[in-house]
Every structure is written in C-alpha cells, then in structure tokens.
Amino acid sequence: MRPHPPATDPLRAPEHRRPPPPTPGAARFGGRFARPTLAEPAFLVVADVAAIVAAIALGGRLTTNTVGVVALCAAVLAAGGLYGPRLARSALDDAPSIAGRLLVAAAVTALARQAVGGSLMPIDRARVLGVMVVAVVASRTLGYACLRWMRQRPGGCRRAIVVGAGEVGAMLVAALCGDRRFGVEPVAVVDPEPLDEACDTVPVVRSDALGETITEVGAELVIVAFSSLAEPHVVDLVRTCDRARVEIYVVPRLFELATQSSEIEDVRGIPLIRLRRLARRSRRWACKRVMDVTLASGALAVALPWLLLAAVVLRRETGGPALFRQERVGLDGRPFTLYKLCTYVPAAPDEAATRWSVAGSDEIGPIGRFLRATSLDELPQLWNVIRGDMSLVGPRPERPFFVQQYTAAYPHYRSRHRVPSGLTGLAQVNGLRGDTSIDERARYDNAYIERWSLWADVKILLRTAISLAGRRGS
Image (cartoon, rainbow, N blue to C red; front, top):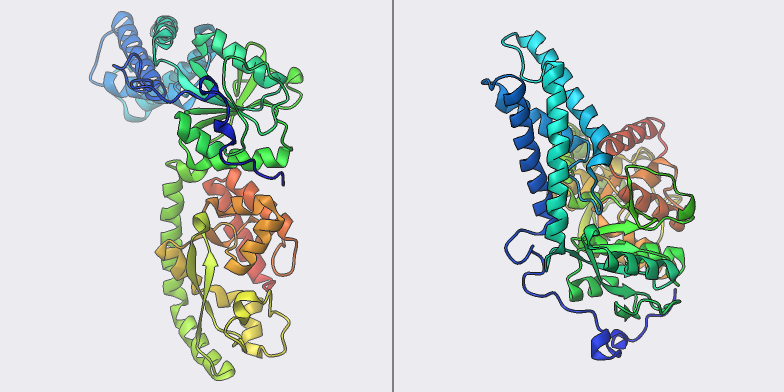
C-alpha cells in the first residue's frame, strides 16, 4: 500500500488553494428552499400530479376514484426512476418513459375496473391518456426550466469532490464549473500524486483521506475519475464513503466506447455511472433485520430441546462447559461475544483466540466431530442474531488476533466489516471455509455487500441448508 502523506499536507497550500468551507445557506436554493436532493423530486411530483389532475379534468370528469388513480400514476412514474437524483434533465429524453409508464397505469386501472366493477376509470380511455402524456411532458419541460433557474442561484448546486487530478478529472472540473445546469459545484480535487495541474479553479488536496475531506468541505457528491492510485486502492478509498451521506459517481474505464444507457449520466461527453447506495444505508435493510429476527427466533425455538440434549452429552464428553464464548469482530470493527457449543476444551486460555483451527484435532470426541461436521455446534449463534450482534447472512466473524493480521496483509479485508457478520455467507456456500484463501473470502464478502438483495440472502440460506444436509461442515 502507498504510504499516507503527512496529515498536514493538504493544508500546506496557500490559503486561496484550500477547499472553501460550506457557506450558510449553501445547502438550500438561495437560503429559502430545501436541499436540492430533496427539493427537486418533491417539485417534480407536485408538477406531475397537477398535470395529471388537469388532464383528467379536461379529458373527462373528476370522480371519487381520481385520488387513487393519480397516486397510481405517480407511483408508476417513480418506479421508472423519473424522480431519482439526476445531473442533467431533459423532457424529451423522459417522454418515451413517461408515455410507457402512464400506459401501464392505464392498463392497471382497466384491469381494476373489470375486477371490482364500478364507473369508468378516469384514464381508461385513449383520449384521456393522450392528453395526460402531453400534459406531463409539458409540465416536465416547464419544471426542468425552473430547476435550471434554481440551480443558477447561490447555493443551488451540490458541492462535489472529484477524485483524480489527471486529464479526465480536469475535464470534469471544467465542464461542471462551466455549466451549472448539472447542479454540481466542484470544491476540491483529491489525489495523493496529481498527474495534471489543469485544475486551476479548484483546490487540489494531496491526500487519500477522502472521508475527512468530505466532512471538511461539506460535500454531497463524490465523482471518481482516473487517479494516480492503483485501482484496488481507489476501490478501498471509495468504500470509506459508505458512512458518509454522499452520492458516488464513477467515470468508467474506456469511457469513449460507452454506449448510451438510462443508467449513465453524460457530462459534456464524459459518462458517469451512479453507484448504488450501500444496502445497509437503505430502507430495504430493515426487511433483512425483520427476516433475521423472525427466522432466528423460530429456528432457536425448534432447536432448543436438541441444544439442551447436545449440551448434556458434550459436558460428559469434554468435561468442560457446554457453551463456548469467544470474542469476535463484527460491524464497523466492534467486538462482540459469540456463542457456540463447546466441542473442544483449549489447553491454554489464549489458545482459542490465536489457534487457527482445531477441526483435525484428535482431542475432539465423536459427538463433537458430528456436531462440527454438520455445523450444529453453531446453532447458539442464533441468539447472537436475535440480539443484533450478527445476521443470518453476512461475512463470517473473525477473532481480533486474526483480523489485525489479515487487515495488514489484505487492504480490502477491513471493508467486509461494513455490514453485520453472518451465521453463513456467500464465501461459505462457495466452499471457502476452514483452511482456505483469506483473500478470496474477503473478495466474496465484499461482492455480497456491494450486490446485496433480500433474494440473495434467501438463496444463500437455501444453499446453506443443502450444504448442511450433505454434512460438509468444518
């Protein structure tokens, strides 16, 4: 890993080269409006609702079900990402998506009318639907013009940090500073070893302490261009933003060959891909916690009699305690006490904390071997899941002694602590348990974190159940 520069290095530049601090009212449009990230979607929702109601009134008549239809149309438009954060907005670009989404809403209302009966739904006619599409596109045209005007006002742009002071970073800074319709104001360029001095209008911070710089300048966006750092180091650098409330955009490699896509923002010929926010920071993560508590509570209730029987048998076989407690490292590197059935009694107090594995030890009895082979010795960890120390699915928790070693050897290892540890995980169901590659495990764990979904958890749990049925424990 490249050594960190001195902590005072970014502040050695003259005063006028330092990133400007946030000014009062900078997070609002002229000090009177809400933050751009909140004000713009709310403004567009109001404009669309007004256009839809006007179209229904012109094309037919307002009825008691109008409120439900308007809410359905707004929900369908939102599902299409038409209210999401975007740098450049164009009504012409949105027109096909608006027409298609409103057509879906019309089809849903037609099906609802046939299912429940009643009067004709307000948009269940081609004339009303056509008027509605034209009205929404027109309202978007006017709305986007208003948003561009609001972005021109003081404090109307979001503050951004560009990572990478090379040619692409300099082009991005010039494009964003020269065109405020994107609603982005670069306030700093971060690069430990700048390759280009073309960023004359924005201070260059010679540091890789991205999280500290975000806090210092009050940034709301991070745009990753091409830096002097190696790509693995840039990935670790960007992952430090997971704890900050910022949006992250990335310039893709070989961006000159990038094709047009609704997922790509275009800034004067430079494509930007918006990264999905870390799942743990999203509302969907609450569903994972509900699933954890529900399944863990049910499984522990079913397994409790068997656990008591196993505890009695193990007590006689090992002569030690039935329950084994050990310190492990979990979310954000915080330690917690992990519980397992005690299948082996260490000879020394610190042996369990520093010995890698006892799976092949002759000191483990037949009952202990069976429990370890089927992973039934890990059932007490369901209590860790209920308490919130762990999740059913996540990176496997490790002991502090080994965490220190692996973090020093593998820079991306620390990134796996961004979510709670798991009873099972993507690495385990792919055969990476026991004496296997730590580097590969960390890579699987980080891939799980980046691409998490509730269905991914369900798949891992099902694959774990199949693995346990085959008695492939450690």
